[in-house]
Length: 219
Figure 1 (cartoon, helix red, strand yellow):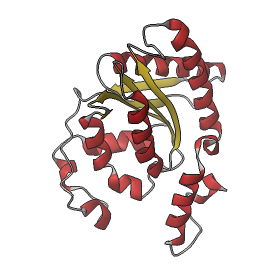
Figure 2 (cartoon, helix red, strand yellow):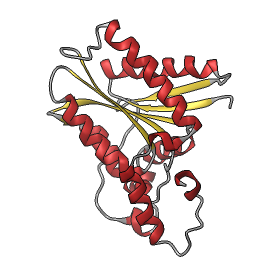
Figure 3 (tube, rainbow, N blue to C red):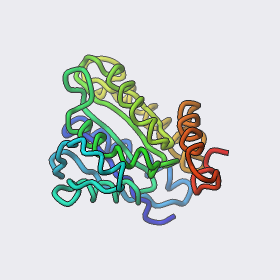
Figure 4 (cartoon, rainbow, N blue to C red):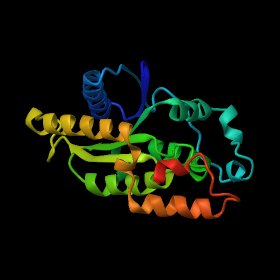
C-alpha cells in the first residue's frame, strides 16, 4: 500500500543512524515490490514518557491515567497504526536503556490486549563493546509477549562484531533484514515462534468464544 509508516524507537547517536539505515534498506526492498514506505523516527529526545505507577488501571479499564499527561497515548496510536514497527535501544549498564524499559512498562495493557498481534516488528540493540547479546535476549523475551511478528537482528558494536563501522559487516545484515521484514509483511507467521503461539492460545482459552479477530493470524 502507498504510504506505509515505520515507527522507530531508537537511541540517539549510533542507534539513530543504524535505525535509519535499516529503514532505508527496507524502503529499497519494498520498492522492488512496488510499495512506497514512509517512516518516522522517534527518540527519547522527542517525547516525554513518565514511569509506570503500577496502578493497574490499564488492566481494569484499558485506560492509563498518565496518557493524558505525557506522549504515551500518541506513541500507542502510532504503534497501532503503523505497518511495521522498529524498536531499538542502546545498551546501558548491561541491559536496555531506562527509557526503553519505561516505554515497555507503559505498554503493559497493550500487551495483554494483544493490540500489536501479528505486526511485523524489528528489534535491535547498539553498544560500545559489551553485553549486547544479553541485552538483546532480555528485550526479545519481553517483546514476545506482545505476540507481534518479531524479528530480532541482535546487537551491533562499535568495538566488536558485527561492527557498526565496517561496511563488510553491515551490508549483508541490511539486505538480510530487509528480506526478512518483507516476508513478515507478507505472512506474519514467518516471525512468530512457539512461545507466542502458546501465549496466544492461553489468551483465547479465557475468552467466551474462540471466534476472534486475532485467530486467523495463527491458524
